[in-house]
Image (cartoon, rainbow, N blue to C red; front, side):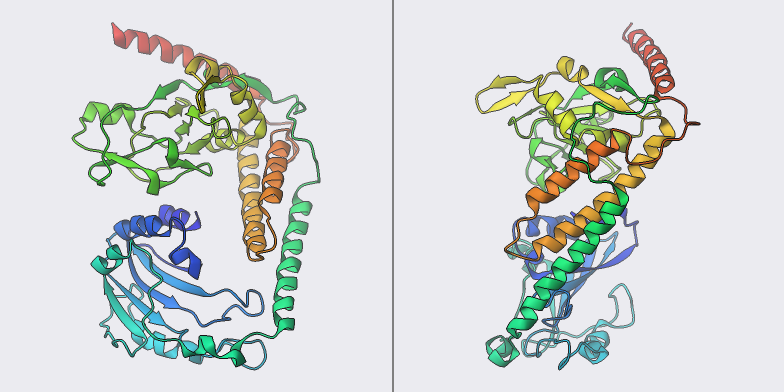
Length: 438
């Protein structure tokens, strides 16, 4: 997810370097993610870091640095192995020093975009060049090694038990510090109800606030990657668009493209799914530039500027919203669905416009912190932090939409005024739409 976020925010020509654990190079959907990355970016260099690079904070984590630039597809990937046959880093006896990277810096060259003249050092060396065709044969998985690592069998290089125990304690202590920061930002509150909210807020409905709720195109899709990407049920993952789970449509007319393409601020909603997943959403924020709304999803479009799309999307992640959707579904074999009429009746809580900005900014900061906690907890295999993180997420969202997350400003224009404007705009929109049909 973090890699996709970096890809989205990079402008053409922008460059990035990211630290990734070894498993991110080959596990689960790694190949699909790197395939997308290599089509949009030149992933020119990978540095395999020495074992223990992040001692004492994550002593057991094996990590890499990937270097890429947005704008051109990848043709070659250079890999520097700074790990094989290099004694592991320790806090006292073998600390990390600039000398560990001297050879890599010479091989990398002076061009920050990896375009300096380089030499493949062969099977006995540390710096190798791999063509994109070699990467494709590996299904875009990048756990590539060629040196026999004698050091992995060196028992003298194993961490001491007390060091491993100290590492776990450090992770716990750091996580506790992060959680204390969260507590400083929000008071503990176990309520998930959104019954109580400020008097300047108002409850409306999805049908009243969104000018358009539209089914997706039924055009024939292909899996070859030819044409324009199109969203599907499985494209919505963790409240984002997973671009490794799209198909494509080609030979599409301008009229059809205009009718079904996503525009900035559109929200896709899964209205046919399992009971657990129905109502999940994703917010379109401009990437990819051409993206088609596919069947079995509903596209929600505001048609006005009185509600921030990201505010609405955060609201749709609350358990309150999901329960309201589930209470209106129709049941079939192995799946449920909600039609446009019933979805239109689902309530949405509207805050004053200025407060919407404050809520979105605060939630962005809080969820960044929560994600840091998730990463910390996942470093300890004996700790399953998922259920804890899920409860924490819902607690934060509930607090936000009760109006308890940011201070109330009495000078804010009440949400009721916003709703009246939305109603007026929608009335104009309906009249215009009827006129166009004549």
